[in-house]
Each structure stands twice: as C-alpha cells, then as structure tokens.
Image (cartoon, rainbow, N blue to C red; front, side, top):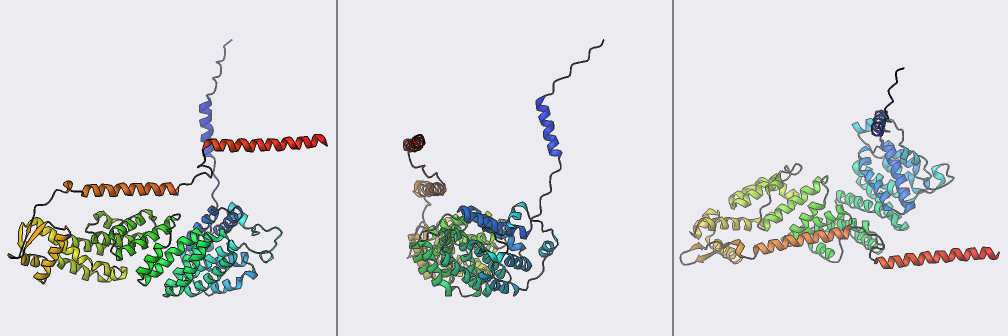
Amino acid sequence: VEKKPAAKAEDPKKKAEEEKKEKKEEVKEKPIPRTPESELKLSLVLVAKGVKTLQGVHISRALRKTFWLRKKMTKALLLNILNTYVPKTDNRQFLVDYVNAVVEKKTDNEMEVEGSETTPAPAAAAAASPGMEVEGATTVDDFELLPEALVFLNLLVVIFLMDNGKTKEATNVAEQNLEMIKRHNKRTMDLISSRLYYYYYIAHHRMGNPGSIRNRLLAMYRSACLHHDVPGQAVLQNAILANYLHYNMYGQAEMFINVTTPIERDNNQYARYLYYTGKINAVQLHYSDAEENLSQALRKCPKAAVGFRQTTTKLLCIVQLLMGDIPERSMFFEKDLNKSLFPYFKLTQAVRDGSLQVFTQAIKAHDSAFKKDGMSSLITRLRHNVIKTGLRKICISYSKISLASICAKLNYDSVEDIEYIVAKAIHDGVIHAVIDRKAGCLMSKENLDVYSSDEPAKVFNKRINFCLKLRNEAVRAMQYPPDAHKPKREKEAEEAKEAKDSKEEEEGKNKGKEKK
C-alpha cells in the first residue's frame, strides 16, 4: 500500500499576504460627490459643534470651507439655504431681498452644480436635520437659530453680494451683523466676527470711503481688547493701519503701532501687519527695520497669496536699493513674480550701473507702473544712490580724476554740486578718497581690507540675532500642558492628596451604609 505524502503546514506569513491581496482586490465603494449644498450644511454642523464643545477648531474648519464655497455659490443655493435655516424672526426677508436683487451670470461651474447629484455626504446628512441642538422642532420657524450660525450665513451673504458687485448692500448686511455681534458678545463668535470685520473694511475700501469708518474701527478695536477677542484684534489692527496708509497718515499709523501689541497667533494677519510696519519704516527712513519686517512678512505669508507676495517683494526691492544693496537676481525670476517685477528689475539694473541717464530712462519707461504701486516717492530717493554707485566705480577705476570728468561721466549738470556730493560720500564712508580743491580733482586712496575692519563681526552678529529671534518665536508659538511648569514632586503630591481624599470619601460612604 502506497503511503500518501503528508500535507505541508501552511505558512502563516503567506496566508496573511494572500488575505491582504484579497482585501485590495475587493471593490471599493465610490465616494459620495462633494456638492456645495452638502458642504454648506456640514459647515453649519461644524459651527454648532464648536459652540457646543467651546472649541474654535471646528469653527475654523467651517470658515476654511468658505473659500471653496465662494467659487461654487449660486443665487438659487443661497436662497434655498436662507429659506431653510433662517427663521422669519431673524430678518430673513431682509437677506432674501438683497440676494434676489443680484443678477448673476451663468458659468460652467454653475451648470455643473445644477446637473450634479445632490446626495448629501454622511456628515452632511446629519446636517439635514436642522435642529441645531434644539429638540422637538418640526420646522425652521419653530426654533431660534444659533447666533453663531446666523452670523456665519450672513457672512456668506456679504461675500456673495461683494463678488457680484453689490458693495453697498454688502455693507448694510455687515453693519446689521456688527450690531448683532455687539448685542450677543459671545467668545464663540470671535472667529466668525473677525472675518466679517475684514469684509466690512474691504467693502468700504471698494466704495472709496474708508475714512468714514475709521472711528468705528477704533471703537471696535477697543472693545475687542476689553473682551480679549484676539482674532478680532488682529484683523482690526490691520484694517486701521490700512486706513491710515490709504490717506498717507504715516505719523498716526506709527503712533498706533507704538501703543498696541502685535498679534502673532494668526500667521496671515501677522504677515500683513509686518508689511504695514515695514512700509511705515521705509517712508520714515528706517530702512534696516523695514527690510527686517518685509523679509519676515514674506517668510510668514502662504505661497498661494501671490498678490501679497508681489506687493511685498516690490517694496523690499526698493528698500534694499535705498540701503545700498543690490537684490538677488533670482528674486525677479520667480514663477508668479517675474511679470510684475519686470519694471523693478530694470530699475535695479540702472542703479547697479550707476548712470543717471539710464536711471532716468527706466523711470520714464515704467512711470505708470510705479505710480500704480505707490512707489514713486521712494523711487525719487534712489537718485542719490545711483550717484554713490557711480562714484564708487569711478574711485575703483581711477586713482586721480578731475571733478569735471566725474560730472561728465555721471551726466550731471553742475561741477559745484558734484563737489558737495563727493564730499558727502567721503564723509559717509561710501568712498575712500581726498578732494584736491586747488587742482579740482579727486584722489582715491587704497581700498581697505574688509576683514581688517569690524564689518564681518557686524554681519555675524546680525545673523546670530536673527536665529535667536526665530528660536524665541518658535518657543512662544508652542503649546504646553497646563501643569508643565510645576515640578514632578508637586504633581505627585497633588495626585496622592486627591487619591487620599477620594479614598476617605468612599470609606465615609461605606460607614454610613453599615450604620443604616
């Protein structure tokens, strides 16, 4: 009789791998399509959850969704949401009338939304029951909507009206909401109200009358400080500074900065604050502080903020030229900045050449761009830097040259003026030379070795200070447990005391039961 071979034991590793392959081969369920209606409902659920748990993270998530909703928002969708969620007692008709007044153009996105399925996502399906933590509500008019959710819907209306050119109507809705925020005075509203402050100022700026709301902005900032409304303080600070700078009130803007404290919690608002501070310092001749502020603003701003990066880089370029430095060539050829920075690239080339003629031609060729950016007043200061650069090149090339020849090389009109300019350059340490007034010439000295001076130590000290400042900011931005400052022994003693107290309570209860 032939013996059958014994069956080999299955390898557990191979069996596990086969099970994984089978799982991967299983047909995955198709994700439910993302629609504006489902996202809007999910945003309302997040706002309600944030109010219930007193956590601003959920409200921040709802606000981040507004960027996507803004592109997909339609008149029909907004009217449907208002009629569904806003009770009649909360001025629903007031909002509906403003939205109905909008005549919107049909876009490809709108056609897709109308033709797409409106099956809500699982998270949004929970929002389809619009009770908003209110039990026994059969219709929307039977309950009072959460104030935070109502302000959030009003914010969407303001954004929709502004996007469709109804700026005056948007300001009316925003002012009504500001009164409601002031009446409720809830800290759970701070994040939503800060976004509303921003659009309120932008709407008045587009209307051309930002000065009319300056006193109101200052009053709102004062109340935000008293109520410890940190997001509101950050937005209102920037709105007030932008208001001052719009009317070239640099003195008042500097006084406001001196009596307030910057809010570093929100990177976007802090980057904007640094830009305004850098612009004020640049106008008031504090170029080193301005360069530091603008460089920090560029590091903190998101890459998606192309417009902010363009504006900040333009001002940083001018500040570096006024300091006597030449900006890096790579700065002008970044992907999103090369077209807008082309006039400033030509200006930098003119300053680097040290020719007044080329400098004047560059200003005339791109005068409209400089005026549009508001840089004309700063660019006129660059004329002295062009002359200094030309003098530096002449001193390197010639050991002795007449003042008349310098005047001809720089395309300058007066020899007497050139003498005073050269004397000032010698006094400032731009060039190392001596003026021979009898012979009417300039005699240059030997160039000193930079490494024999204290210049390397200054640069090294500047870099060390920057690294230390960056480290301190990182430490301040970290979050620590509430008892992190206490030593371990104190924590252990507190825990032992709590355990002892709880044990005594249990023993007391047990004794009471035994007596009964």
